[in-house]
Length: 224
Length: 276
Image 1 (cartoon, rainbow over the protein chains, first blue to last red):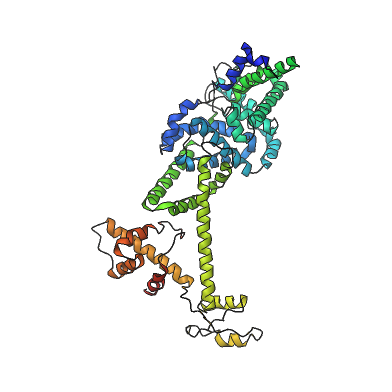
Image 2: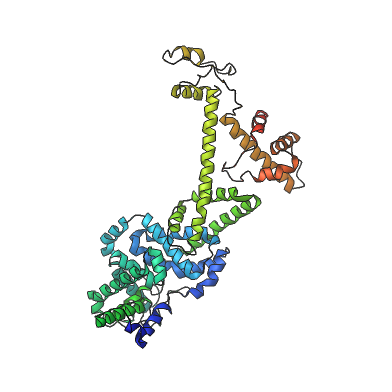
């Protein structure tokens, strides 16, 4: 079927945009040097890497294996550190690798986690009180809320959305982590978004207060 | 049809833009931005532990590398990898390797043949020990309790005390044999008197070689140290098959505890074991 839309100016822009990533939570370019340093045994480099990726890792793992997230994250880093001296890829590959290891570890940990998550969702911790400005508290509350909503999606959709948005992977990387085809990842993520858009809490939040960090030009995790 | 297709494609493009964090001020976009928001305090709590684990892993890694570099070839690598596999975090290495091909996937996969080698080596060693024990049992040279057990399992194996050489433990000897009338007539032991070293000699020799090598290495590296005991040196030279071969010979013996290497040439084992 000839694709009129693809050759239209609008379609072309959209397609170009789709294949050139402009924003990731932490730019891979910023991680290249720390990654090299860490692979050479440099602690500071590793700390930068860890700070940049640990929050995303925890958020993803929370959706996959609930309360075991922190343990699984530790195990993941343990394994990654062990094999890091022999790692030859770039920062993007490292990100994919990290999340793939994490996913395998989480699955090792048992799929029951999905069930446990269902049960424990009602008692989500209210977030540790931050000593900083009230705005930050609200911001974290917004993060908490958003992650909770994403976590309520069906597992495959939640994973696809989190890997794309929070972990900062592109479609190919997400597909690699999930062991799926890129098309399947696109569809899962899109369905997830559609479901989120239809969520009553999202619909009622028509005005995103400062809570969501809407003033940021793009979502950056701290610490890069 | 085409309109439907266009709408669908547009929706897809929109979704991808949203997921890339580029799009707009819709509630969903805001939600996604919030989900990727700055780190919360609890999320960075484990940094010190993580860095400590990193330090430890790297110390282990580099010492292992230094050890491996001193040794030759692939067998040593298999040993290191086998040790790494024993650690708790090791299992998913194989899992990660099963994923799609990619930069990082290559690494864990590479360790597979190494692990296979280690496994093979261990299996070969086990077979060797078992076979050695079997031969020793056939020859009636095991310690009395073991010999008794072997006899209980396999009728062809003589009972302890059958062997005239084993005079030290006369206890369960003849009486035990007379007390089991159902057992078929025992064949005369050691039809082919193979020079079978017992398991105890093997380990004794391995330990001994390890100790001698360590001694030798220390003496080599530290000129102020007093020279080796001539008796030990002679034993080591004999085991290595020449004074100039000691280095290579010792290099082939693992520095760690894994006995996953070939021992000295078998002819020297009994000789060395009999020395202490």
